[in-house]
Image 1 (spheres, helix red, strand yellow):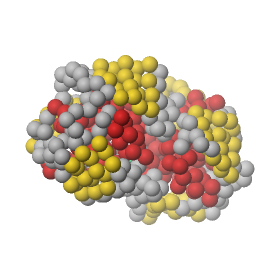
Image 2: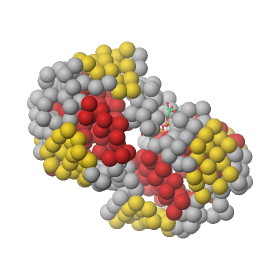
Image 3: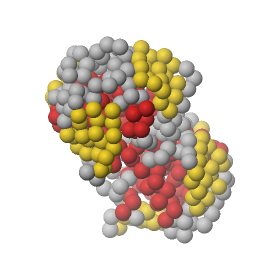
Image 4: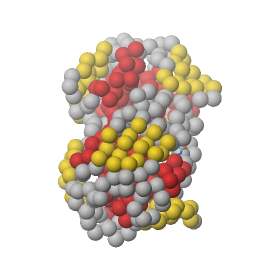
Length: 417
Ligand code: UD1
């Protein structure tokens, strides 16, 4: 199994190019199932989750041509509407093929994603919406088994804000008959990016980016070309790493607007932040001050940045309160951070972090994608050597993280034991 060896204590400095957004590209790849035309995507990051989605689509008969960061997909000859357990179990976002299959082919058999380390994460909202739109959906031997004629547009009010739920319902609605209104819709920039891609394919969608999305169904969609937005979570992770190591890093190919709540917190921690149209400079020349955050759906503080800000608080001055409201079990990184000498106490959904002057390198185990990123940040700021195990979690969502960090002056190597 591959691991990372990190010798901490080096200030990060220089420029880093941010890749395309994982959470935008996954639904957009799934949307290729909605048309027999060719979908050409640019700025596609090289991630394990992207490879899993491409494998899933290829297994259904989608023709895929990948060259660097450009991927061409053509679903003119789909031969299977099954998403097998072996692929779905490694990536919950596989559920995003359910609605495109339903609305274009009237049939789907998609393995139910199980629980995952950060919580139960059911997909009941996706299923309820499809039933309301006229689909017959059964749970059969661990699979969502679906049959339907043309889906009917409806008003769907989701019980909670769900990102992939909103995206799936939007994809069901683009080929449904009549108008669908999604109330309580997720407002994440990744939802907007999917809407932009679907519009380029001919879909009629309005209101994305707000909590009411209105979709008028079309008979069919056509091929299109689209560039995926930059990954705001990857950008936020590098910004937190720059602040924790008292570095000076310029993030390139980013949208500062999409990252404003995160940048506000890093600024509150004491960093100087400058932004341009597509770059952000984060400079920290003193010990950071601890900050408090509470995760919320967009435009609130993203849960996907919670662990990284906790790592920053671990080396800061003062006390920070980190409250997680989206997932019930997203503090798996706490015991690992404690192995580095962090002072953290968990009370229900809140972690109270008292910053220490110096963390000390240790052996660590990554437990999920963003937890891995927080361990890397803490290890970069710690004194001495850390080994981070199970980095396959990191590879799911970061494109060449250690290569990018090394170029910024970090002492970090991947090795196999
Ligand atoms: C997406 C992101 C993930 C991010 C999360 C929250 C992708 C591929 N992943 O995950 O990185 O951490 O949003 O911003 O975009 N829920 C239900 N029933 C449902 C759907 C959701 O109970 O049918 C609950 C979940 O258990 C969770 C909450 O709603 O507690 C929000 O989850 P959701 O927004 O759906 O997360 P994902 O879309 O899976």
